[in-house]
Length: 314
Image 1 (cartoon, rainbow, N blue to C red):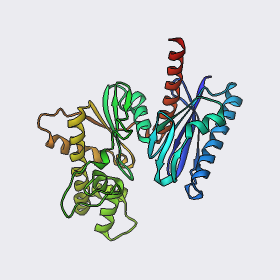
Image 2: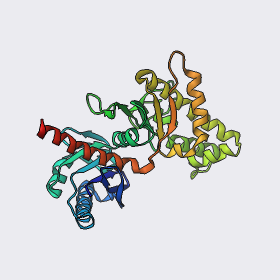
Image 3: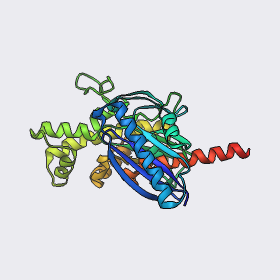
Image 4: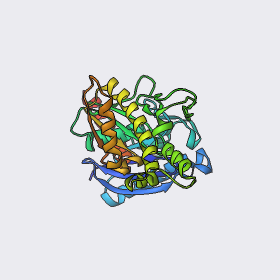
């Protein structure tokens, strides 16, 4: 059975898989990223894990994997396969494509983690029936992936889709954002932002966004106020995004989407209230969960092989 190696590198965990041509996850595994051991240790861990998957593929399926795809956080130069910068991993200008290619002896392609997850959601997940979508995972932070005709738009400098850093609030009360600005969507509507607001409200330092959602469902007026503030900010950001992009579908993923209709019912209403001439897109939860990164990395690898075949036969 033909298969490829897929790796999804996160700040705490590396998810890895062997993926078939029909997008089946033939084998899945996870390892700690071990970022505390330093950037070189993280790279070596990735190389070792990829080599293990190569051997597993040969042993279990009787053939060498066809290629490898890897999704990484931070700033990525997909043309050269370089991890330009990843703060959580301590990476600067890491030639991942070159290092993996040398270790595996296979074609390798490198992608940005959110855009790679968006590729999977667009082709085989919640956006598979549409040619225009915006994928937005809402978790510790907020990011975005712009889907157009089966591909993900990277932008001129590889930073398209950074919707978390749209400014939706101003003035002295606008909260600071990790990017250095104030009033960013991420600082107001991410799961982290809700956790901070709910912890302040309750006086419980361990309270988080999931606790806030549970309190909303139980009818706690304090929780409803915190939740609605986040929903309103999220709706403001989404309206900016849909005004610019006019997608058929808005796909919300990440940890906050696990709140289900506690999030989606008021969010759809808040977006609808803000529209004037714009068309209301479908607003749906992501379908692939935390497998999106590996599935997307697999898609990158299969796309690389298809492109190479086209170039050879042209």
